[in-house]
Amino acid sequence: MKPSRRGFLGISAATAMTAVLAACEGGTQPGENPDGGGGGGDGDANAWILTGGMWPVINDSIGRWNEANPDQTISVEAFENDAYKERIRTAVGAGQAPTLILSWGGGTLAAYAENDQIIDISDATADLQDRLLPSVAQNAEIDGTTYAVPVNDVQPELIFYNRALFEEHGLDVPTTYAEMLQVSSAFQDAGVVPFALAGASVWPELMWIQYLTDRIGGPEAFQGVLDGEPDAWSHPAFLEATTRIQELVEAGVFGENFASVAADQNADIALVHTGRAAMVLWLSSAFATFRNDAPEFTESSLAWAPFPEIEGGEGDPANIVGNPANVFSVSAADSEAAQEAALGWISEQLYDDTQIEEMIAAGAVPPVQDIEDRLAESENGDFLTFAYELAREAPNFTLSWDQALRPGPAQELLTSLSQIFLMEITPQEFVDNMNATL
Image (cartoon, rainbow, N blue to C red; front, side, top):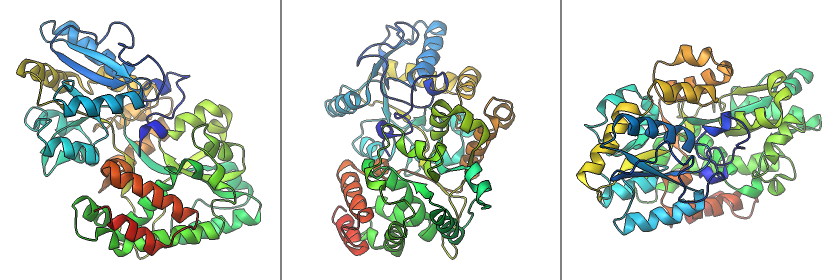
């Protein structure tokens, strides 16, 4: 899932919390150093980052590195999301990438590694890797080799729900798929939409197929797609997941007007805090949106839960999907001196105590081990601890599919999935469409 449309880039920048919740749009103009100082060194090494949520933390961290290492400074340029994506593709292809290349991992990271555009940083980052949550660190590896490191917060997908509505109707939050159907039916009878869904934006629909597929067939189903296995989309889990999606649509679980709800203005989240919908499946970053848009509701009635187990499914109910983190890779095209400066910053200052404190204070979850006490003592300790434990305990943390796939297949996925939700194609046609992208 692309941060420009959600978690990393879809959060309001109105509070300090959102200043560190992974890259949101807005802020400085493309190419500007966000604060005119900080990370703006004049050395050979440079980093491109996204304006908005991520740059204050990263810029501050690089600024501290530059002060301590005047002979190995790293300059920082910040770009808005769309401008960055266009420029980084051109720069990497032309061998003119920044020293530190920001990406979302997945298919893009694999392509960089296959084309020798980034370097193996396994040895240089070994100590940092030992500190990271394993479920997050694995997403920066290609065939067992580390090509990147996470640079911001971990964002699993989970269910946010209106606790007051559940109490009013005497219902318990569902822990199994069967219970979810029962609860949904009860809310429909009461005139409440069971699950808000921003179908007009399409990408929120990914959360449903990702979790359903994982719970039904385990992570192996989608891994077959990533591995390029012939007809990988013919795995039974995909057919069953899309069949269940259409059953949910027909049953009214998403209401009658989900196709006209857009996520850009947080309309799906608003349905929950205004009591018109009971639940929403979203990245953990939605907590910031709830807190910004409806602080009283967040304090009194917002609650959260993992995606339910599917009885008889092969997937571990502790598995999660979402955005483990944005990642930094080191360009193979840059000088040895620039690479050394970048790796020095990564090994000595990335996720140091200062950065961890800044992230927690802002309501973000650093993907590092042994911070339970610090999270629990923070202002939003209950939620941060829950999100952290989801990531820490997950046997598998699958990157959002539209980021894990290459651009062409990712676009076909969004197109075909939208057609599934709109009942325009059958589950078998979805499978056929996706097999054609392999």
